[in-house]
Amino acid sequence: MEKILVVDDDLGIQKQLKWALTGAEIVFADDRESAISQLRRHEPNVVTLDLGLPPDPANASEGLLALKEILTLAPSTKVIVVTGNDDKENALKAIALGAYDYYQKPIDTDTINLIIQRAMNLANLEKENILLSRTNTAMGKIIGNSASIQGASRKAEKIAQTDISALLLGESGTGKEVFARSIHEHSNRSKKPFVAINCASIPENLLESELFGYEKGAFTGANKTTLGKIETAQGGTLFLDEIGDMPLGLQAKMLRFLQERVIERVGGRSEIPVDVRVICATHRDLQDMVEQESFREDLYYRIGEISILIPPLRERDDDVVLLAKTFLNQYREEYSAKVKGFSEDAIQAMLAHRWPGNIRELQNKLKSAVVLAEGQLIQVDDLSLTSVNEASERIFNLREVREIAESKAIRQAYHQAEQNISKAAELLGVTRPTLYSLIDKYRLDDLKSQA
Image (cartoon, rainbow, N blue to C red; front, side):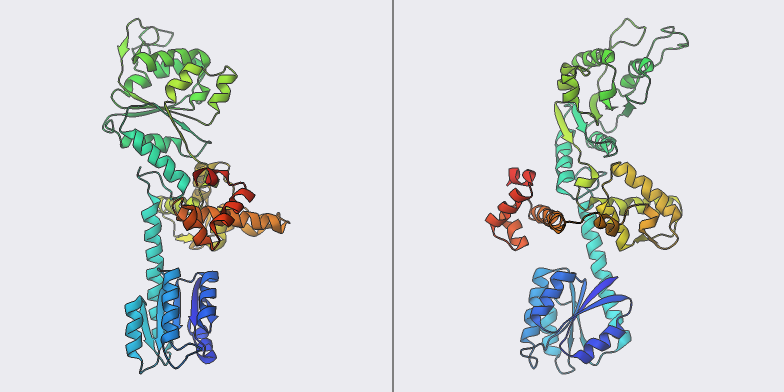
């Protein structure tokens, strides 16, 4: 439910607004100090504020100070000031200070509901626009505003205009092909083909001919000369997915192609020059495979001139919600579904889930949820995810709960402060040395190294 903060020291007005404002969770405050406390605790989108607050209810000074503090702490909050009939001057002062609107007593249920609903709609729209503005990275199709995905996107953007070979690393389902396509689309080869091949999905005895093509009569069934994936990508980009699964024997031929930029078809004798940009991807640890001698060291250094680590979904902060909303809109149209959004429990469950299958798992869960949902909101049961309450029941140690919450808050403040430790400390309300101590305490080494 939407939250509305009512700031008024008149219990009669509080009760009247409680019954008048239907369909929302109402929280109350009766002075400036309690108003700020409730604002921090509940983060309401809309606040109704009586300008005549104690200790000086006869004047508007305390109410105007409360307004300034509210808008300083939460600039996007819509504040509706409530005034007496003879106090239009202070109402206009409040508007000048940034209040959304003003309403004069006595309270009329229909009117105040209409004003608040408009304010709520505007607040939600602005929040959605902010999210959308942060959703698309510089690489367009790569969705997310977490620091980890933004960093990977900026790296991809920098190499897109070069022909340098790129190696995309990350767990299965993290979106390596999306990155590869985005690099291609932002390169000077974008009008040429993007050709992808999954080295793990093709039998070893067929992979060579799939990549390099074959001449007529090269083997039984080769009734005509056929171009391989490398040749069909001429002028464009060749994406070798799961390069770690390429057979060792074929790796030598791939290395020669990458060094000389020529190929020989299976059964052929002539060299064919090919101009392609090569992007590789794998979920495997290629360095470990090199040590185990299951992957050629020279090929590893050839394909990995620049490596980009694509983070798993569980390490991307609130990106799961942005991705979920994007996929929801896509599948809603695809399946002509009536579902419009997510329940709060569903959102919390998505944030708590570990997503071992990453974005691919999220897509599958949402597809079935859109089809199975009976109401306008997708519920936890529709997603077949463990709810937050069920997950928290497995944590019996308050220290562990505190560590999880504080670590998350530190990361969020750090990214919101754009990697500035001093600003992050200020956002968290602690000193810089205290923040350093917390980073050490919770072993947030990645933040420490960037500080």
